[in-house]
Image (tube, rainbow, N blue to C red; front, top):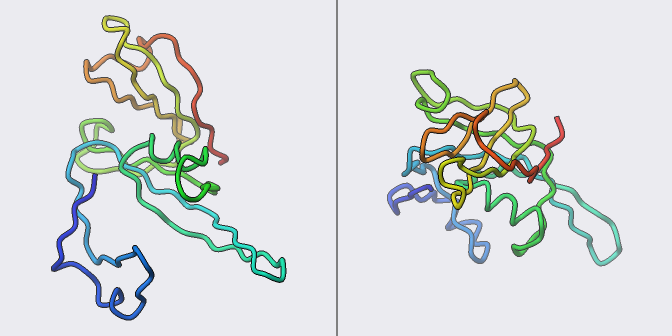
Length: 152
């Protein structure tokens, strides 16, 4: 999740007043959990039938939000060109945040608490991270289901 403050609002917001959009210079990561950077392709058709494509880089605080956008559960269907996971130090065994390109996302169940669903994130670099609240290793998680695949 990200937090913004009015003091960090960009003056661009005054000059480019798109309805419902605000430009920010700073956003704070509130929860020490993985977050995501997505390069998306947005396609628009004009009245003459021509298509214009724009690339957008977006920050997401949840893989569920990316999944919803890709499946059309939001205002616009998201075409993902690339997705990256940004993991905190406790997950990636370094002394800080680390960004890696995502290749796949799985859901799984905790072996000791089968009602708890966990996400497993696989990276192009060959690493696997999970959201296990019980610190269960990725190899011990059960009933894996492939949820998302990203092109590399």
